Each structure stands twice: as structure tokens, then as C-alpha cells.
Image 1: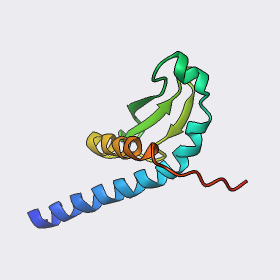
Image 2: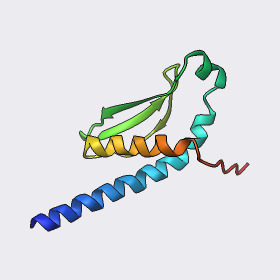
Image 3: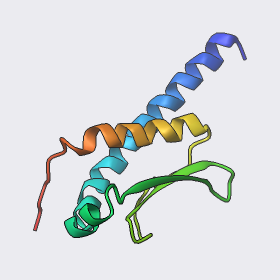
Image 4: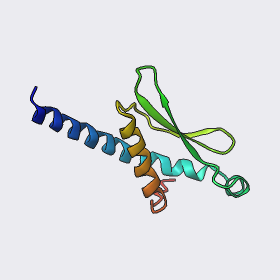
Length: 104
């Protein structure tokens, strides 16, 4: 495999990771609504992301509320920890301006 082919594969992998993060983001917004405002205001920034290794040695993230309850997960493993962190950054940047699509 040439350097160009490896480089192209890395770019495609990162694009797939970002696309996956976007999909996870659309499922994450309703999860934010489950956290009570009282809990967040009483404990400051009660939400926290955790990065961990899955059974296949991939990196995953989960979002936990102040009470320790998992309210969102990555849904997939990332080969590189940097890709996992990047997915978290995409979610953090977009969450404040996300619209709510109430289908009920």
C-alpha cells in the first residue's frame, strides 16, 4: 500500500467518524432533556463525558448525568482516541444550537 492510499484511508475513516458523531448527536439532544434543571443548577456542570475502551479495544464515550446515570453513548467504537474526542467536540459545539424535533 502506498503512502497516498494510507492517507486516503485515514481521511475516509475520519469522515466516517464525524458522520457517526452527527448521527449520535441527533439522538443525544433528547437525552439532554432528561436531565433536570434543578440537578444541573445544584451541582454546577453535572454532565460529563467519559472515554473508555470497549471489548474490541476501541474507544467509546458515554455522557453521564450528575447522579451517575448514563444518558447517552457513542453507539460505536473508534479506532483512535483522537477520533473519539473529536466526536465529543462535535456534540459539544452543536448541542447548544440544536433544534428539537418533537414527533409526539
